[in-house]
Image (cartoon, rainbow, N blue to C red; front, side, top):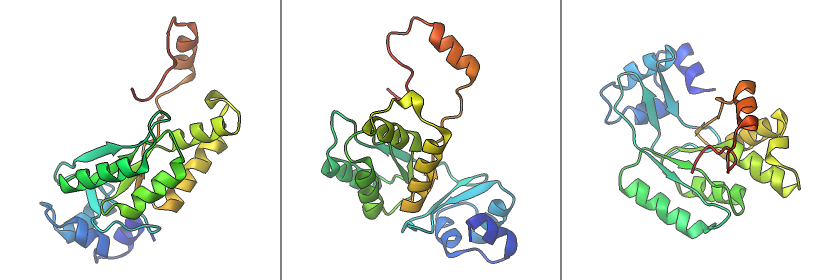
Amino acid sequence: MTQLEAAKTSTKPTDEMERAAEGEPAGPARLRELVSEGRAVVLTNSAKRPKRPCAVGAELRTKVNANIGTSRDYADLGHELRKLAAAEEAGADTVMDLSTGGDVTAIRRAILAHASVPVGSVPIYQAGVSAVAKGSKVVDMSPDDMMDAVRAHMADGISCVTIHCGVTRDVLRTLYKSDRVCGMVSRG
């Protein structure tokens, strides 16, 4: 059962809501109401429940997220785990794995295994890495490739994902006509 389903079918907050409400202006009962109303979410995943879940939304404090992740030029898992530890020690509420190089699946799973906070990801990076590994191009990915990456991340225990939805056909036509030196990227 999802946190939303639990919030809508019970007047009792879930264990995750209880823990996420610690240190928040809204207590557990109010957090359950906010989740039920769609005004807050509890970042957790039944496949890997974080030790320190957090909630995001109305009537809650602002959260701190730390971005970590490998690139094809530097894919050192030990370095990422040290960054994770530093982020948690500094008080980050969440961590985003933005890995695009190395064994991104193994890296994501190791980060999840060591994280005490919710971990988010960007599944399109996984889909792109997988496309290139198959000898294809990123631009040739199918919607199924993207959804397969989302499903894989959720199955591993990712608590939230970033989905890049801002590209329309008009944007693509403009890009094809432009004199860009580099391709379009979501970061960097």
